Length: 265
Image (tube, rainbow, N blue to C red; front, side):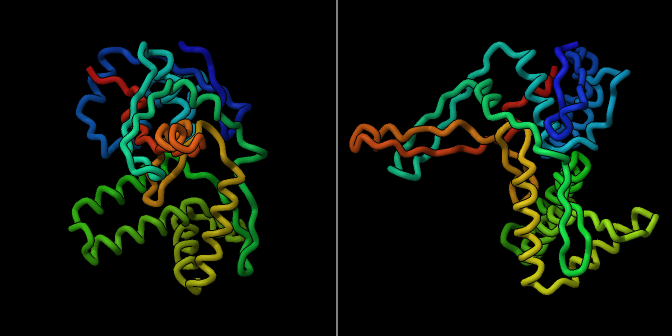
């Protein structure tokens, strides 16, 4: 077992993971990058200590990425990454090379509980970070989107549905006393769809602010389509620094699966 770590969304909860066996890695070989969330669930549930096991589908997206990062730093020799990008300040190509371990400097534990209360349009809502289950659902919606022609009306509709589902997944109606989960889900879905557009946009702003107040884990960002990306250390533009002696910086977003080490034989 590696040293234990705490879930950033629930610091009181410690997790133990171990290195995967060769036999286990064979189970991960045939998974496509587009299935990274389902792979993450399978991988993290496989390598967890059985006595302290909790289903990582119930962890937040940020919890899951920290767990992958924890595995990676315990099993890799080369921790450096090099990213080429077009600078938005000088329009030249630069290279940002950095040690991925430096991302740990931006680690945050959540402030308070992993939920925020909101009263909105007569309803009592609870806002929570997206879970692994939510991320898998969004991933499946993105897979369905891949079947549509880019820019087509069908693709545009599915992109909008993904954004809608991302918002809905962060919400829970605390004043809905329906016992059956699928009916509660239906009630929330119908209520959201019946909101006037201006009210819906106002709700989006409230949810965004609440989620920002619950920032936790490694520096990361969940995109509009539900993908989670790492935030790189800010890189100083060398051209402007040399010409004007002024520092302007760029933050890059890294697709996490390219840099997390889910092993494959």
